Image 1 (tube, rainbow, N blue to C red):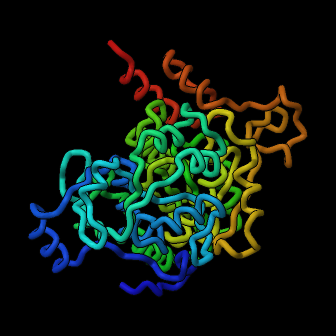
Image 2 (image 1 turned 90 degrees about the vertical axis):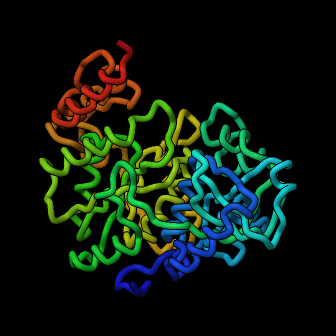
Image 3 (image 1 turned 180 degrees about the vertical axis):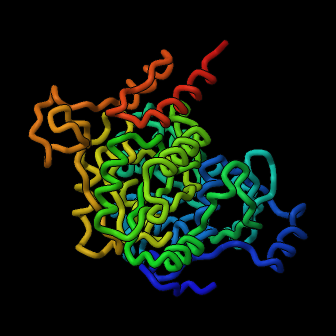
Length: 392
C-alpha cells in the first residue's frame, strides 16, 4: 500500500514501515541462536511496535546520542523536525559490553520470545537527571515516568529496528488498526478532517462533551485509547474498552466515530506528552487533536493548562496537526447541561465534576457516579469491574 494515501502527510513526510519482509524474517530467524540478546521491558516492546508500524514516524529505531540530546533539550531531532519524547533502549554496562557496534542484536520480550532485531549503530551514556528534569519537569522518583528513567540501564543502545512480524493483538484484535490502515479507512469514509482523542481513562460526560464539540467542526472522531503500559492504579485496558464500546453504541453517531487501540505506553510527561500524542495521531491520519485539561498529567507536577501552552513553542503549522484546546468541562446545574466556564453562567458550587480518585473511591464502595458525571451504562460497567477486583 502506498504511503501517499490522500490526506495529511505523516510526520516527517513518510510513513515508516519497519516490519520485516518474509525474506528478512527468515534471515533473522536463521540467526536467532547466534545473536546477542537484549530483553525488553514492556514500554520498550510498545516502542518497538510503534516504530515498526509507523506510529512514531519519522523515527526508524532507537535514538542515537545526537538525536537523544536534541530531543531532551529542544524537542527536536537533529534534522530540525519537532519531537518531544526520547525514544531510547537502555541496558546495563555489563550488557552493553557484550554488544558490538555495527552488528545485529536480538530483541526479546519479557517472556523471552524473539520479537525483533536492532542494528546496533551506537552505545552511549546519558544523564538521567537531565532527562528527568527536561522531559518530566521534575527529578522526583515518585513521578512514574521519572521512576522508569532512574530504574533503567545506564547505557543507551541505538540503531534501526525491525519487528519480526505483526501479530494480532491478544486482547483487542478487532481494534488493532495501524496507521496505514486508519489512513485508508478515513479516505474510504470520506473524512477530510479527523480529530484524534487520547485517553487512558474511561470516557465520562466531560470527555463526551468536548469530543462532540469537536465533531461539530470536523468530519470524524478517531477515539484512540492507549492500551500499553500504564500505572497500576489506572483502570485496566479491557474494562476501558468495554466502556468505550457501550458509550459508542448508545450515545454517538455510528458513522462519525472510529475506535482503535494505541499500543503506546504512558510516560505521564504532561505537556511534552501532549505534543507526542498529537504527532502520533498525525501519523494515524488525524488533522486535529483534542488537548484538554492536564493532558497526560499525574499528581501536581503540571499546571492545569500547561499541555496547551506548550504548543505555542512551535511556529503555526509547524507540527502539521491542529490542536483543539478545551477548558475543563462540567455539568452545570443552572443550565442543566454540560458546559465550561466559557459557556456557563454558573458559580463553582453549581458545577458537577469529580476527580478520577473520587470516582474510584465511589466505585469501590459499590456506589455509582451521578449521571451528571457518567452515563449510567458506563458507570455500571465500571462498578462491576471494580467489585470484581476487590479481595474476597
